[in-house]
Image 1: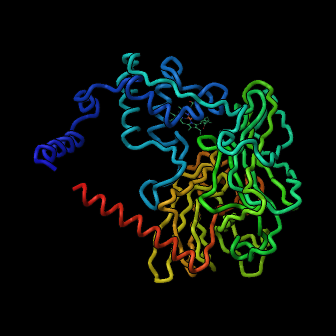
Image 2 (image 1 turned 45 degrees about the vertical axis):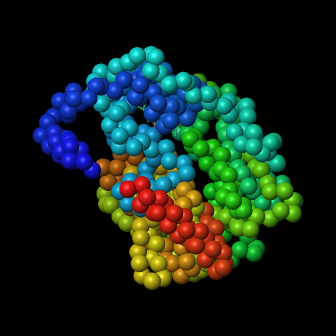
Image 3 (image 1 turned 180 degrees about the vertical axis):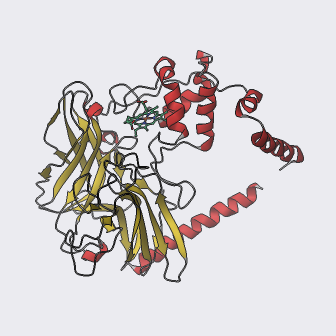
Length: 459
Ligand code: HEC
């Protein structure tokens, strides 16, 4: 760093400490919509905020965005928008589907609003993003052709005015033989379907015969089912990692969970799941499985819901924890926290066989309305040797401070209803035998050495 740079940084720090913000902003020209804000909205908001999509308003043009400026500053400043609740101060931070804003982007948006949300020179506007009409075409269709299997949920009609609905129909896949999945996509279908579909989840249910139960769950009641795909926009399609796949068995079914909300007009919708398979006879080397890990401990041999392991006192903040020892070498592909209205946060820590501990991920500002799946980037997805212990902690806020809390004076226990509680993490896991795991580890450290060497050369 040059001396003048150090000096400037120093001055900037001093300025930050002593000057009120508007004076600081005056130094640099105020950001404009055309030049500075539109590119951010294109990258991080339009996936949902465009006509006929899930968000209440479009943010594509200045005229559309301007009336929302104040609300935008609030939601963006509080990091409620875009919805992304992973704690940015701990754990892995590189995800395949990251839709969060950088600190600089948040700063730009807030300075833009504080400066009166100027339009700027229309010539600075980036060309509009061409969104493929994914109501008509699958985004993975160009690459894989028509899906090999299409599973549809039954039609649901949401009245113009109604309470939010969580709907969970079950639909058989009608598969007569096992098939390996290499890509999945999901979408709500129907005129204005996206307006009422807040989220859509597809769970794969099947009886696992060859996969030991303890590799799939720490809950004796659960085996062979799990979250398959979610629609919550930003990323509708999922391709498996190289030479990896998910296995769908004959007799399997899809359990849907749709969160619908009324928008002032009657709308009918359903959801479709498209699956592309590896060709028959071509088995990928690695199988990705769906794991459900409870974040509380039930006494050994006692199954839910008899154990009532979740017992949250009125007007209290409670934590629960659980430990799961991995029986096989594993790569964790994603982290997804599942709780209900009192859920506040969840962390996943690895305690390695040598005793070293590492927080892998933490959701601190959990919001039941957003079932975010945090999919690790290829070069950081945790590689955990067998014998590693996963340590989960879940936080529940059953006080008035929790804005989602319907009644802080209630005792809350485990249960299916939204007003009851749950606590588990959904993990997609690839298990490895010792030789393959060593190879994965070697690949990872080779990649690391190259980047470090590259960085050193840069200096
Ligand atoms: C994953 C989809 C998604 C993304 C990405 C997203 N939003 Fe939203 N946004 C929504 C939905 C759905 C709502 C309405 C429900 C709610 O308020 O949570 C909403 C609500 C809002 C609101 C509140 C509107 C009101 O009624 O006052 C603002 C402001 C907002 N979004 C701004 C943004 C901005 C700015 C970005 C990008 C930086 C963004 N959102 C990214 C889905 C999204």
